[in-house]
Image (cartoon, rainbow, N blue to C red; front, side):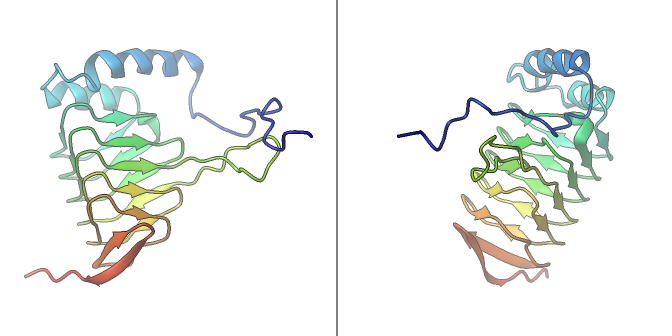
Length: 184
């Protein structure tokens, strides 16, 4: 019987990493040694390096230790963004984060996946947009193609697979709206 999950024909065709192999390789080492490194508490150095590799960053970024950013050249951060310890922006596609946004510790923004129905297991990536005032809770996951609307909240360890409406508070797996956010 032939294995239907045979990945021998897998090929990352049609996947654009957004830059050449030299820049990718250089980023790998700079990220590991200086940006993601827990020994480096200096946010200013991390921000300068991210910008050097193409990230668009507003003012007031707080980037804690062990933050993993796959491809900075596919990242846009607004003003006053908080990237909590150990969060992971797995941006195989573009990630745009607005102003006054918190991405809490251990959160995962996941822009890529594979088409498990395809023999060649092709990539199926999609961008993520997190609008102004939103909060992604600790250990929460935002899946490919999701837009987190203005001031929405994704609670701790929740997984969102579809657009979140503005001022909605979402919880669970898959995340569902549980109430409206009221800001006093």
